[in-house]
Image (cartoon, rainbow, N blue to C red; front, side, top):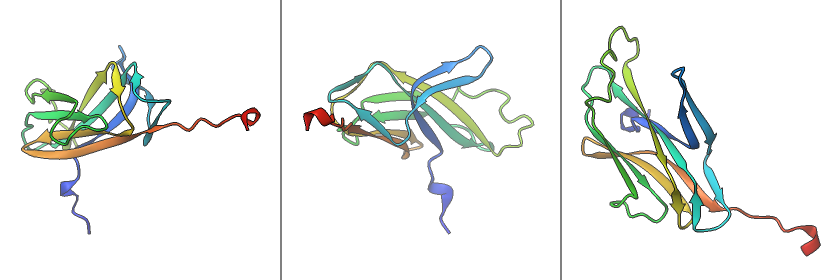
Length: 153
């Protein structure tokens, strides 16, 4: 049986926009599933958003962590974007009161505008936590294939 203790402590959703509604809901618009097709490179996107969800055991203290976003071509030690997340202030004070869940989930909305892609490849999201790097997810970026019209054949 697989040991699930080494699974990432969360996930990422790649999308065009994330909106916090006055009702307390979050609206996620234009979700990318597995691949983002570009018309050519460099591809300049007006905005690309990352909804990063981190899960922590309810019985342990939450550490500071860093979200790292890599554009295609970035070296492993040099992400295009780094977002430090301090544990203090990011956790609701009543997160463990009466909760039946055995974890605490923190949602982060990270918009980057503009987001420039110079080449095809993978956009990767990693989290640095407790000296370890966790792979949260990736999105493949490819050149779209535009079909030629029958008049050109």
